[in-house]
Length: 459
Ligand code: BES
Ligand code: ZN
Ligand code: ZN
Image (cartoon, rainbow, N blue to C red; front, side, top):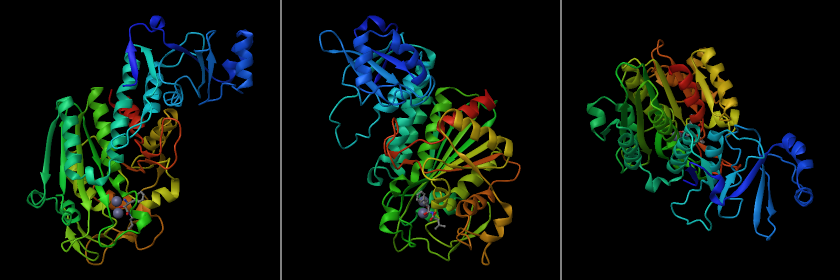
């Protein structure tokens, strides 16, 4: 952790950071010593978010930092500092705005995140000494989970196959005293997960259904399902080179669902949690599933394969049917499911499909509030005819190229009984461009929003 929680931080000799926004800086500036005021003016510092200024002390060494933030509880408030400031120890000074401790801890840690599995970083992040508090700890817990989620997504497929993904779940299960199990390879057929098996059977690394269970029988059941396609070549309907380039991240739904599960357990939400991750590699070999094949899935539905690249909904249909068997109070799936959702909403906005309008509104509002947004799209039943099959019940591609994300949602909808409260999130799990605290690469999306929602709903 780059943030160190201490009983007291004032007497540590750490460089003080004065936190301001534009308005508070305008009020503070006239009261500053003239040299400091002039130096800030020369450097054009006005308290804008994500800007900072270094102030020398009388000896010419670093004496003070001014940092601009977007808000007192902004989750990325301090994110540009850990890798922007010189190495060393810092503390938050009393003369500026009082940042929310959760935001301070979270934003500093997120700003220090780098994926350093292979390339060793050239510098250490600056350290923040922060007064210990439950809120600060809550911030650190979230940051640790977000970093772990990003690491899973960033790790190349060679080192993050179905087995490694299962091991990552096992580690989290152990941390929190949860039960872990997995159904691997041909066992999937015996235990009636034929769709997961079909997609994963051509890979040298065995497909599986990973399962974690935690919590008391007395609490309401919550099921989380994450798409765990460790690499999506497209299968026989092979992707283009460009389309395949980032497909190590096609287990981003699984990484995010695991992250959310970890926070639910860390904060001991009063739920009975089930996490399900169908984990496969969508590979090409002589035994690969083919366009035109028909499979009988777990709940008896016959699905026709229109395109082997629409593999996510195929593995998810068995996992969702299985999740629904235990009649959860709420079922949430997260998946890097369609390019169409990205065409519609771009990289920053996961698409939310919900059965109940009020839940969707709550989630969209919460997402904006905690700066972890998602946007509501419809499970538009009139389009269902577009995924009907002549050979079987459903096709995994739409007859029309329009409304691709809705078609995928409608396909999944078929496997979740109507009386189950179900949320489907079609996400990117990736930052295309770097922003403070959000470097280009793997990303946790909607995890903080869903946590806030679940705390509201179940606590
Ligand atoms: N994993 C992809 C979806 C994806 C692509 C997500 C790029 C994020 C970025 C998924 O398995 C897929 O290939 N979907 C196809 C479905 C189509 C064949 C019906 C798509 O969206 O093009
Ligand atoms: Zn695909
Ligand atoms: Zn995919």
